[in-house]
Image (cartoon, rainbow, N blue to C red):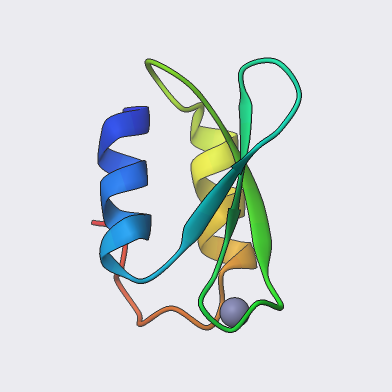
Length: 65
Ligand SMILES: [Zn+2]
């Protein structure tokens, strides 16, 4: 999955981003209690994609398809 696709899905669902270290970016969910990290630009590794789905539990099911 590409950074662009992930960032688009997270923005659509009300998440906001903050810069992290280097090519990392922190994404916070709308409720403010969940956070995940993605890398940019280019491809986000399958592990980080799974982690985002696992961590951002307050987003509607299937938010990242
Ligand atoms: Zn949340």
